[in-house]
Picture 1 (tube, one colour):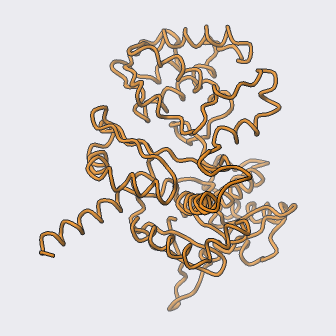
Picture 2 (picture 1 turned 90 degrees about the vertical axis):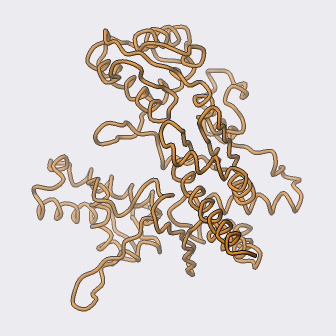
Picture 3 (picture 1 turned 45 degrees about the horizontal axis):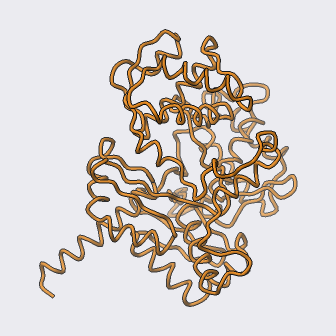
Length: 410
């Protein structure tokens, strides 16, 4: 093979590896939002599509003329650890009201290519008034308008809504604000990544709340894996996809979190070979430990959420609490964690100002433990928070007289 041919093959491998990590970190890439990323995905569409289909069973949709690429990531078990977030300071997760408004707003945007914030708000008011399952939407209420703005800003960040004139945030201050939008219905329709659309689950409205968990599972049910009478090929396909999905989507994969079938597949020669090949082709560094597996992206492209991260108080507290937590293999009680948090707040009075209150230590502990759980570094057993094996990589160690701490993004 000529030198030029070798260079072309190497360039394609590097592009594909980068494209894989780009799409894992941002499953929706638009030409308007990131032209260079979209061009890379468009250029390497075929190998990227085949990679995601083989290793994960995920569909990659690339629409060059419409200017977007969408990776439809599906999990067999719904995961609430990555909620939609408000794009204001603090980035609080969406609550039930905002998720409800998101669904109603998306439905009302589909038939209108152009709209204003006022007309859209009126449509949402009417939709909520005519559906007994929905609470009314009151534009005279500032909290309601702020929730509405949070939904619109999220859709703007996805590229489904484009501001032509005005500022969306102005509606939070006044229901008379003037903002003009253009709607990208093609992107809007691709936001939902579910094999079974909710509208296909014919359930009476009064039963929805009682059967919510069941309905949620039904939306991600994939027929390709068969049911109780699945063939060996279907079972192996399901095992490959479920393992790679979790490994690529979660910060760490512990062996004790797997079923007996999953663990047997992962530790088999075929399973190990497939995982190692997927990591290599994706440009990841694979750490194989006795307790589990960890994928590290050296460039942090595939990482949608980082730890350690000093941009959020709860994540700083989570890192600081890891030291006493890893020193207690049997875990710590809420009272013990609260005492550690209290000491932190007393030691650094100018830090974590929103937690400098009577119940601040308790709130800080709850938020920090939630961070550790989301990153697979701790879990609750009874009333105790117990460190997971991956947590011990963050222990403070002494090297050449200086305190050092291992730092990994993923």
